Length: 152
Image (tube, rainbow, N blue to C red):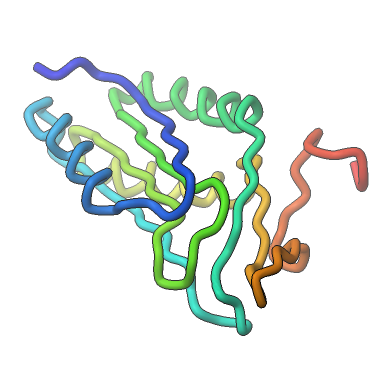
């Protein structure tokens, strides 16, 4: 039986989807989980951008992730997450979330809730890459409570 754990992995640049998801699958496939659900976020080619760039405040992201670990423990669910730091070009991966659960329905519900909460509350700042410049994507950003001094 594989030791159960949760993981938050941060990488410089784009994510190697095959390597990360295969590693997680190989780790958990023999742990009696009937569902291993992956969500892979890919940077879209739109708004004349060359890609996206990400800044992360790791202590706050870890606090956010730890709350999810507590939710998962009560349901015998494993949560795995990887995210990029820095530049990720169009058509490359910047985010992977995986839920391992004994039941399919629970895994499907948790992945949806996890990804939506991530988009709303994780302390990750997004920038558009245009002409080799980073431009803060304010119009697509959410105010994160206690994450800044403006607009509290």
